[in-house]
Image (tube, rainbow, N blue to C red; front, side, top):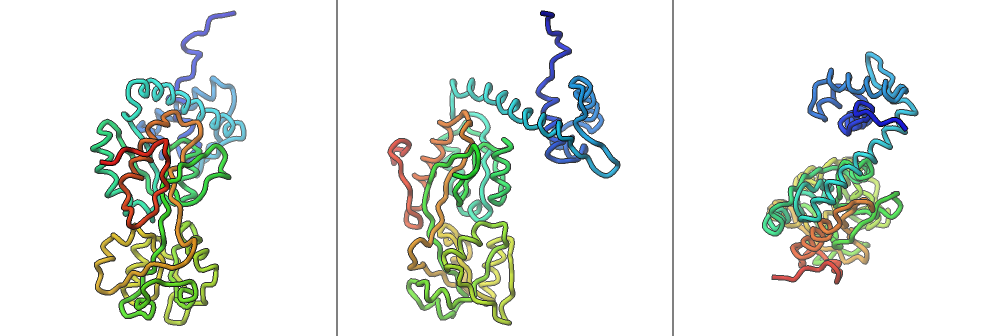
Length: 325
């Protein structure tokens, strides 16, 4: 058997370039993501194609298309990069599992209300942990988890049907009704499903899981919008709540959002729902193969310990429940 020359070996950087172009379908954006010049990236990928003896990409003036064999190699490259990262993480974990980078995703309907009160305890409890946050909708976060671009994500939908993903339940977050000041439902101490069915609800756009959850609370009995109510699909809770404050309609918001600046608005009122099952379950989702489980369990335990218990129902587990101060 001949000895393997160093020049025969692919390096991890080449695989990183390959995955970046496969994801971005653009050499310039891939080079920017990898923090190298485009000529450097293109030259290294040309060498990789020569080494492998296959065409990885079809280049045109307008776009970059990955070849079928390129897709398969890119998938293997993602695993190779993840395994290389695991080598480093295993070594770090042996020294301190709560040190180093942790890439977290979080829903836009959760991030403004979860992260402000969570980040300070994380810094105090785990000073060596370096959090990197990504705010995106559920589908994008699940895809990024499966592509190994983030390590875990705070989600409000189950991942049991997603290949290779698992989740740790954290808490159940009830929904509240936000109404304009003086709205008939604002006089109800607690809103029932019958009363809710009479409301003109404003909803988020389709990519937000909160829209479907709101419809399920109403049992899909949303009325056709009146002429005075826009058939709106907003991209953020901020937009919905501004419309509510302007007297356009009502909307459902998760309980943690009731601690936001809108709760102090003189143009809006918030009411709890007296409806069984009117909540969303927030979990920490992750890949089953992720090597730093102690870090995720510690983060989950910290969330359960710090989340406002007057707003949510904590799903405590004996294994990772921290001792309260």
